[in-house]
Image (tube, rainbow, N blue to C red; front, side):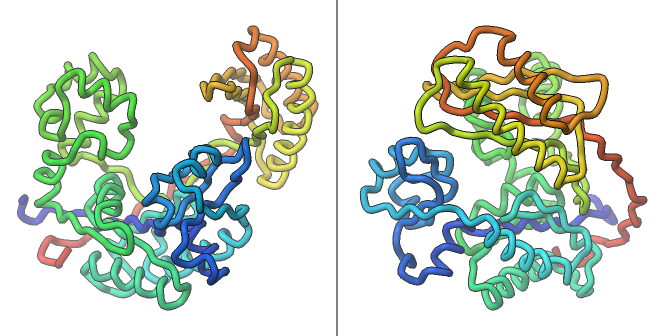
Length: 364
């Protein structure tokens, strides 16, 4: 450990099975039972699953048909996003009693920088424990937490003692922890990348650390530099309270597969209308339009076009999407269509960061 080195103290809070837990909270008859939020029909998809359902290998993004096959007594409930947003707002209010440096990732998780905090508590671990207890006492929901000196490590740590637990990885333990970590547990390394790493003899953080910079950039291009840094504990991304919105999108899954571009265009009219309303509500517009096509075999294709001006009007969206749709022949029958707008006209204002003045003599 370097004497006198200053470290951030980052907490990653992750609500446990948030959507499903809210449904069980509001309906006591669902407590202790396998619950899936989403659609259980032929085209339904699981948005979230309770821990009782997860025991039967029911997972988010799984088709409703497969979920029922895995768990015949699974109870499906429709999502109530307004209710989830309402509770999420209360959770964030608790966060802000400890620090203004709160970066929400979604309704059910956020980063907190508590290096300097409103409670004057030098222990990030004790702050995380107190926050989790308050969420339980005030909202009757469980949360897990990860605590470390970077967002990357804190997020990995929050998953270790789930549900309803926490894990602290202090600075001096980061490198040994990463060396022993299975490569698929690294945040941001999915199945495809993990498989490629296996083929290169990379199974753990230690294996990854043994590869030099040239090797990693050769095999993983720009991501190689990222992997080289994170396995050495180098991750300096700050907690950003005002995250820029990067995209606005709308998509629909259809009851029956679409086989004709004419039928697809009819559906895209409604999707474009919905997207226009979302852009208006968000008070943004964008230059890049992307058409998302998910086929009946679940393969996904995207086609994009960047315009020289910002748009949000349905007519321009449709004209661009029509061009993208007929850009090449659709490969198969289609089960989902979506439109997204990126390259938004949001100007980020970087605030000067207050210097961190915390020494290692404080308990982590």
